[in-house]
Length: 369
Image (cartoon, rainbow, N blue to C red; front, side, top):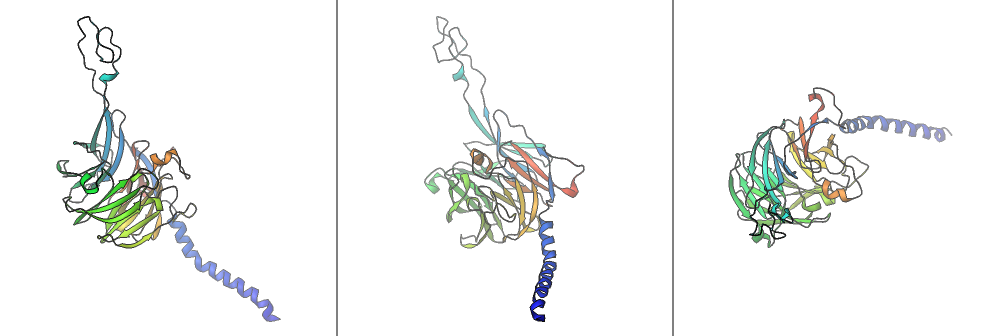
């Protein structure tokens, strides 16, 4: 009879012991879920007529490299009228009888890379020529900058002087989009995109540092809208396969070493919205900072997928069902400065660079509206 009534007491004691033992772990998780950074004033740049920011990177000096585009509208050109003082319809001009001047305004897209300081000061503008429209930029610590576009790859030095341009049509038999770039001491890894949907696929090629000797090493990675972020660390190539909500780890020959991540709308350790993590960047301590489109969330992980906590949130249109905003929101490059005190996130909708600052580094309280 005594044994009959001792069991509940033992169970209660055991439960209390388990709860007490779990408190440190629970406290650690709670602490990790408290954002370390807060959004401050964004960086804005002058873009020109119908201008936009198309991509972003950070160079060895901590300056931002912004791929930009705009439309240049030429000034009207005076065209002589005929002997009777009229201009044929559709020919434009200023003479009597001119029916339209529309044909004198021809939209011309222009492209450049703007070098911008962390404080938002424009330091330099590198004009892009020969049809090179920056879709992806990657800067190396030695000052070399790689720029990928639609069918073109180029190498620039630290001052914006182009060293080489490569047309990629012969390599793939088509004009592919550059979806991602990563660089190691020996190689350049390029993801080439095909398609512009949630199930768009990419192939990853390995080049030498001079963009010679291309070799396809990874097939069929799924990246929404031809976006597939890449990075390298500790002899591994990391791929943000955002349409499958995971990060894949390969060696430099394309052999799969492992993968981590999953879609999860309720647990913060997973990835939400349609296609995440869409971009990532290594910060201090070889910590990987991930950016989630749609919800504007930045988190930290180890290279092998251990969740390390929330960095912060930026103001962005929230969607979680796939919508017309998906295409406009599925690309938010993220860059982390050397000490992790600032995180820069490109806003593809508002054409600004949003900034997260370490809370202890803020000078005065501010709320983003």
